[in-house]
Image 1 (cartoon, rainbow, N blue to C red):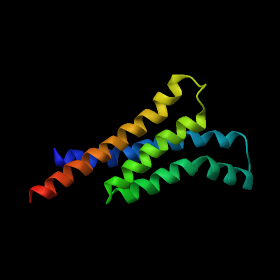
Image 2 (image 1 turned 45 degrees about the vertical axis):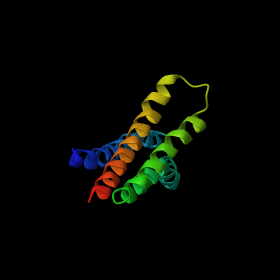
Image 3 (image 1 turned 135 degrees about the horizontal axis):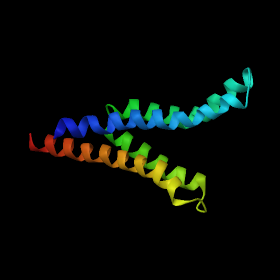
Image 4 (image 1 turned 180 degrees about the horizontal axis):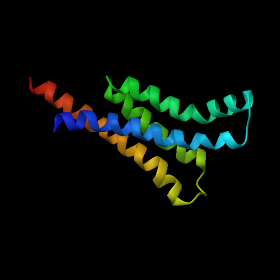
Length: 116
């Protein structure tokens, strides 16, 4: 169970970053040249932040917990409270679940260390 609890949030984090990055592809029809590069970078900022958080969380589970829960809260605040629930379920809920998986592994590894 420990290996699953270790790998599952990390793999799901990378998959979610890939999913979130797909939303940046809409810039290809609207921009050209440097405007395209700047727009693509701007659209990929949330993905890059989560990718950096995943890299740090690879070693420090608590960083992943804070980063992913923080991103879920930020997204709900940024999207506003007047949006359809599907927006929150599609973006914020998976991120919160990944954050809880990092937290679960952190608790499990702490418990394991105290037993030794």
